[in-house]
Length: 133
Image (tube, rainbow, N blue to C red; front, side, top):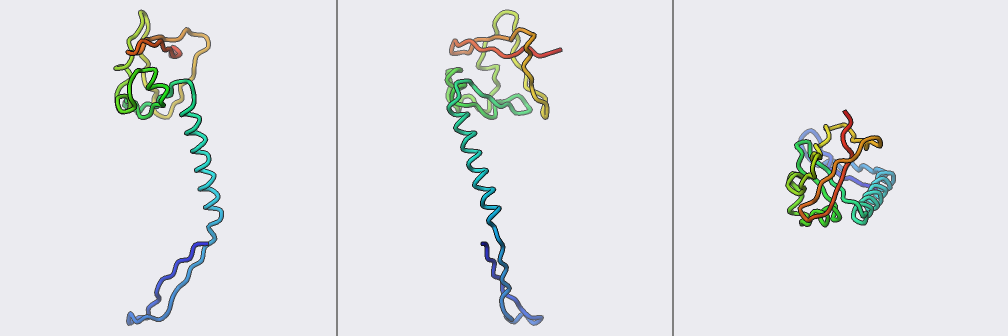
C-alpha cells in the first residue's frame, strides 16, 4: 500500500488538517517483478548464447553486441558499440557487407538464397542471409 499525506489549508493559508491518500500498489509491484524476471531471463539468454548478436541503430552503428560477437570480432565491447560493422569484417569475393534494416521492418532469413560471407578482422568466418530482391 502506498500512502501519501499532504497538508490541507484554509483560504487564509492556515493549516486545517491533512489529506491522506491510500493506494493499493499490489498489481504494480507484481508487474514490476515480472518485468525484472523477464529482463533477467533475456539478459541470461543473450549473455550465454553461442551466436553473436548485434543490434544496429537506424544510422547503421552498433547499438548493442553480446560478448560472443565481440569474441568473434576479436574486439572489446568498447571497441564495438557505437561503431560501424564494416570496420570489423572483410568481404569474401562476390559478397557484400550487410546493410542495416529499415527501422520498423524485420529482417527475414532467406532459405532459397545462398548467404553472404565475410571474414572478421580476427580471421573468423561469418555469414548472413542474402537480401531478397
